[in-house]
Length: 393
Image (cartoon, rainbow, N blue to C red):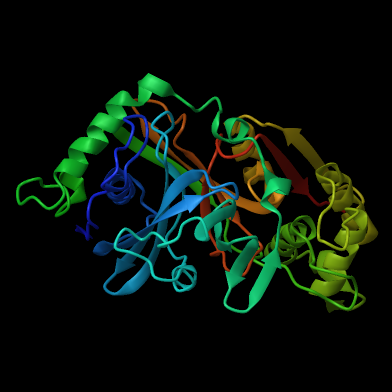
């Protein structure tokens, strides 16, 4: 069963090519129903309730999406991020487990629509794949006690580049939105047969295929006396890949310093090899050579690793099937570029095709991000890099 609390409808006119808040709630519930119906690995198994909705913006004040917060039996049940354009399939990212309530507590005097009273002063922003924060004036607030001052004009990434992609399917999505809106219209009725039993819901979705690795590291960025500044997304994600091979394939030498396992020394090695600066940034094109050289330094002289720019969906999947991969997304709203650890994928087939309904399962390296995040393939970035890695002595 899927229960929903519907906030009051928006009072301003919404263009028909834009997604309204009510439609975003419907899209989120639709995703839950589809996931429960055709994904055997779903973690949404009990009653799910929409508890609140937030609008999500970029740093320039353009709305990107809605963040729909979920509960199950008064316990957190993750979130679903729904895009604002009907030119693309609705779901941008989601998690079964992420609790983003700490962000909501930072928004002062929210009204019933989940909006800050003074949106020009304070708003929820998307910093990267499934990573959100509060922007207040020129301050990005990650949590109650950590602040970063930024200049939004320095990160004025063209939304036309980010939002446009080969998966902007235009009118071909009309049947999906008609189905979704029909479902939304049945919310709260006594005879829809949808919220009470997802298995009775007739849909254009036929099946889902998924694969995900267990045992992949989920190390978050850290500081250390071995370097200055944060560890960086590339080195930290690289460590998570090495962690998998170390513990799942008995290759502990990959993460040892002398005779002992050392997170800090392993990350320090990768930081050096990836040319990471004191702000945690480094060139993406160093990832492949850095992973190979680190492995060779540990005695794995026949290690292979390749990078693919703008890989096809098939290539993204095959890289993850080799082992956990490094996924770098370029032209993120805030970071510019951001690297995460790819651990698997899921694809939902609608009318015989998965195009626009393909998601990378990743481990991010920020503390406020859940262990498993589902990030849509083909949207919200201008360039994607995929790096596979296979260590061998």
